[in-house]
Length: 194
Image (cartoon, rainbow, N blue to C red; front, top):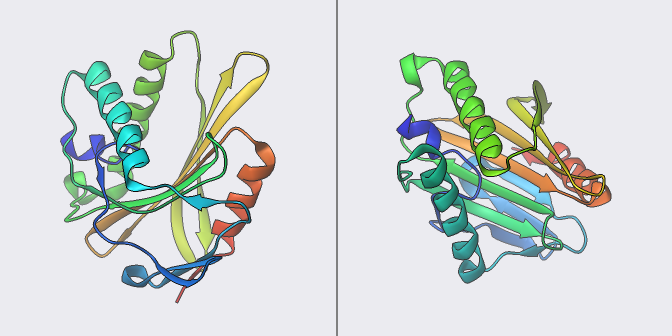
């Protein structure tokens, strides 16, 4: 369970390395040879602001599971447009799937995420699904969460997950603005891993 607690978005994160700017609109992550065209109007979340978000996430984990999350996740890139439209990329180093089965670890992670949302947001039932998508010919396991909010609003999360060597990478796309969400999804789906 300790391993799966660390995969949650905005939880134990640190700025261990940063993307290279090819231009203000293009980010390159050398470690996985990943290039993404940043959607217009998105800015990098600064360290101080990210630390506040991280602490809220850690508190939610502690409140839900009664355990402090291990702080091993490394955030590589975090972009924002408005308060609730975020693209965040992180990885967990030295990752070993439980029982050598990555899909079992993903199932456990999804259950923990579901439990956290139902515990932290009473009365809101997350609508969830899982799919597999191919981005630049690479397989990603995707967990989709939609949280129905008051006033017919919703918050959507798409967690794209895969292993690169011994690192468990997660590409989180979270949004309330459907148009901004689609821009982030399109940018990620058109990104390249050369």
